[in-house]
Length: 163
Image 1: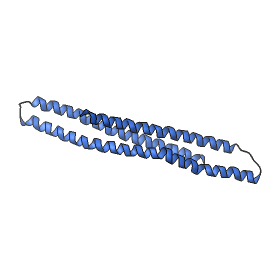
Image 2: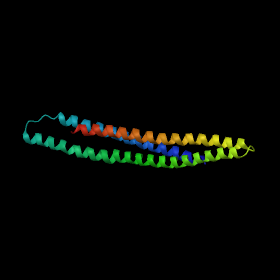
Image 3: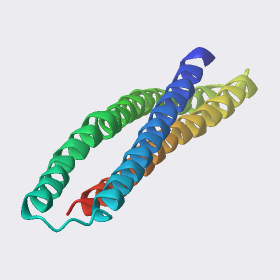
């Protein structure tokens, strides 16, 4: 049932794309926040009312950028984490099944000399499959960690703009 593994690989690619989307959006938001802050900082007014107007505008930008980042980036980051956990769970379950199959193939090989090579070939194929599931689990974990790290870094950038 190669389709199961292919599906898991496809799911990993799906969360990888979503993670990249979150990173790209987070970078855009961080750049926009920096640009807005730079422009606000460039305003040079003397009147108290004008100064308060600029300060009020700046104070309003922080929650706006925080909300946009949360909605457009962190929400996707959580989807990536949830997707990764689902992929890892499914892969770990099947990896356990494959490992059980390896044990049974070894037992079958030891039960009789007749046809032993069939069990050994089956065991070898299942060992390759186990390695592939381990790779899928690692890939999902890597995507999750890299996405989380990227989002945290970008969150820090956004937070520092309007400190």
